Image (cartoon, rainbow, N blue to C red; front, side, top):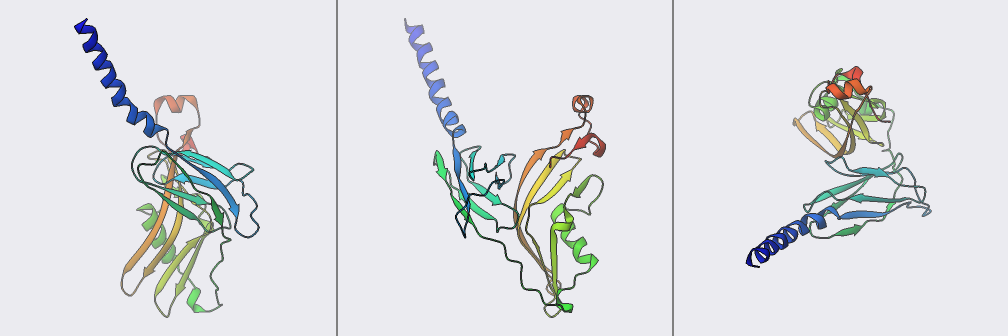
Length: 227
């Protein structure tokens, strides 16, 4: 009888120990994404938990739902072509959160036709070396470099870079497809000061064949990036 009680206590302790983990796995964040001007739902909006592989796009009614991976602090990023990105800090403790977003149309900065807005090849090289950590190559490269806009003001010596869509980067060495929402990027050539901020999510690249997946060889030809 005593042994049964001891076993029961051990079993009960084990169950109670598991409860926090089961509760943490149930944390979610959900909501509806609409147009700020007319309130219409926006389908196909990228929503993801920054720094993780957790993400999804909104359905035809503008709704999304994501699992929060743990009890810690996280950040939700919301991005769609032609709209300003939105972010939401997810604090620990809450089992679930609702975050509805009315996205505002992105407005490109007013650009005058003058030498102030011309950019140079080394402006482009500087930007990608900063974002990628190295020059683009066969093993790590952007998929949509044409989506990036560069502005150089010769009177201030400041380079400003913007992008209205998530940057898509593939890293064949690690086998990941990276979605990066650029919040801001500036470089002061005179002061040698660089400031940039953004959020990213990761998805695994898909091996082209079963044999490649089985052997786990990571080369460019062996992976296809998700659209």
